[in-house]
Length: 633
Image 1 (cartoon, one colour):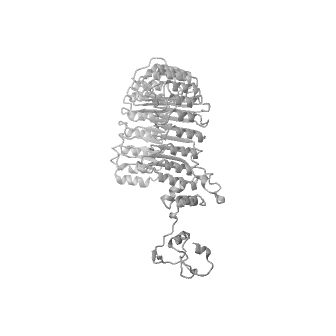
Image 2 (cartoon, rainbow, N blue to C red):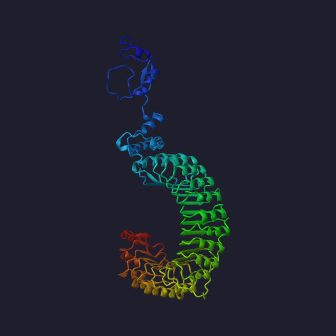
């Protein structure tokens, strides 16, 4: 090297003679490009890749490639790329480049041209969902790099089950660095994710509004604290089966700001009364929706809800085994649930007659009330509640086996009732007895649904017809005790006109009832479901075709209709069915093909499953001809 520096133009430096003392010195300059190792006149690059000889030693010319650069150099190159599209193109070169590009934060991208000035102003309107084996770090890295050039990622959902190559903290970090516009994140069943990944999300994605965490045992209070401190726009939070999240994290969330409106907590064993209390008692808390599901909380938590839940409009309490009658009584008397409109209580044996009366008094604006599997509640409690809840419009009772007809019809004693919808599901306490107490007519009830209540029979149905003349939507499914003798009086009493009728599984109803209903309510009926009514035959189809002017949905699956019944429907000029279901009708054959094709002009849905009389060729013809209709076969 000294000879090169001190060279004066004389002596050793001549054509064909090396300027280096050793091949090692020559290697210093090898990385500078394809230079000849001897001095010569400039010439074109040789097309022959031949080895070079120095002092009798053969050295192969190494292939020059950008891959020999360390990650630090590539990082500096990538962050200077002119635009998101260029970075996306580089990401497709190799996995190494993709992973390296995914580590570059938006604020690390050097703005080198005018059109790059909006690199951080991303709308975040794109949505991505990864499930099962597709949920990997590589895919997340690709999303982080690729979505930047197409508006930015706004919503991301990951449902992981890839044990071998599942999502880890690296994948979440890639999303955090590349997607600052993220507003909604849902993470389910990710065993390799910990606080490290979620904290990075909190530090980078400040626009986050919705966060859903389910079955992630690796995260703790540290993640929630980071979310509370950095994501001030958070409005919805759902946590399920996260065993290491406790009261401290929930306290931080409660203090995060007034934007938080909805919280759902389910099956988190480390959460207790203190967490619920600190969440709701915070001065900045303005929750409108709260769900507590299978938590180790006691009467104290429910009391706090009743006292501090002044903004709550939607409340759901499920599986709170430690909550007693005292808890519900205090919740009702706390006078804090004045704005509550929707209340759902499931599998809470502490809800007794005294407790439900207090709830009714403490929630004067309650509109919808759903009770599921409340085994202790009786008729007396239902009567007291209905007397107190003067604004109630919708009531659902499911598997409340101590509720009988007495409790249901006692609600109609109150002349000022505003009840519009009543649903009874699998309540085994019903017995079809006559009700002799004088009752007031309920002119507000428009929807009646009774499902799988074996004791509900003709007497109860007739009584509903007498008391509720404004019924328009009727759903009676799986009621074997109902016959034409009970349903026909109901039809005659409904002055407003029936719009939707579902009597599927009522096996003792016949053509006589269907014919009567089509005559009386044919001008208003829009939806009719007769599925499983085995005594319904072609006579009903003729009556429907002649009288039902507005019918657009008809389900006669597993009924006794034949090709003649389908023919009658097809001949009706005024009938324009949108949906027809004839699944399991064994007496229908290929003879119905022209009739189905004729109705195809209006059909958008056709169910012919298990119609063994219709051949495969006919099904194929229907599929080809009725291109605007979804066909189930």
